[in-house]
Image (cartoon, rainbow, N blue to C red):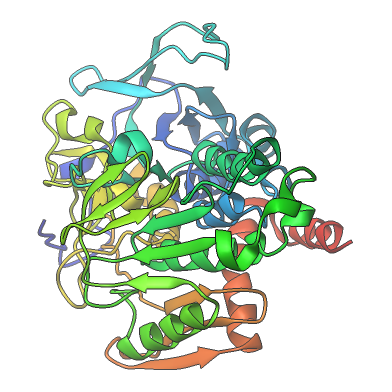
Length: 450
């Protein structure tokens, strides 16, 4: 994963000279419509697509985009997906790129083809047949999936938070659990309204706080069965973390403050507890303790999709991330790039790898968008330099804490309260601005507030 820059940055890059078809514009194919892929498609469509310097195609299996950091709010019921989803067909038309619905299932590097499976609707009916998409430059940005580390029962009984469908699925299970007591006689079954969240990173802690607010407004959720539920007796939220503390990637002081806030809300926090098995009736810990629960979410780590480990000779890590050079091109093919959670990108400032975070994905997309015109001109690409701006965790509209990084990545500033919450909200606004522009975002923000 090394990168050697030429003595003159604008020199001809013979290592990765694109070769489009004779007389036709360069074909850029982006696989994955998450935060990184959609931002990149938008930027390239607005610049290269409108000027007909390139044909930009976004391949995505779903018809809509939802910012992944919002998934825990969808699961908790504090956000309606329809208010934040982006329709790919409409967005592609507005920003001069093409949208192809499908899932990448293979790659032919010799012929420069992305192999797509046939997409199907909710009834299983085929929408379009399986087909191939030709490329001159390929960008893989298919994100990550939950890593259950092979824990028995995790795949069967715990709901991950990888997609909007997963979040909605958990939401439905939560509402059904709240409704069920109304049609039952006798005491409420132990664990029926217990929620076990496995993994106390940012997603797990924010989900715990969101569920705490939701489950204490049950009468706004369902009309039947609520009168039989005693909030203090029947509802329990448990947060389980294998590391010595919650929020392992945050500064220790921030983690202590967040834990105190969670405990004060009545959320039970277990650290240094590894999950040995996930069962239908609860979570079994490594010390043999069974935490009774019928509602379980897995938020304990991510990895790349399994497909990435078998893509026509591309190099991948043990966590299925594609190994890339400092310019984000894959280590074994200069015509294929990877960005976002699915890329194992070298971090030039501190060593190691760029963390799988939303801010990193956005920075990668912006960097590659700026570099693509250099690639078409056959100029050497500049290395990607990740900038860590810190991290924030929101436990409610008035309870946001985190740390901001200064010019030196070794020092951070602890912030909390309204200022922290405004900065937390600005992260999503920046994502919206990169997709829609200031006018559209201002109108949508006003509409939501009304």
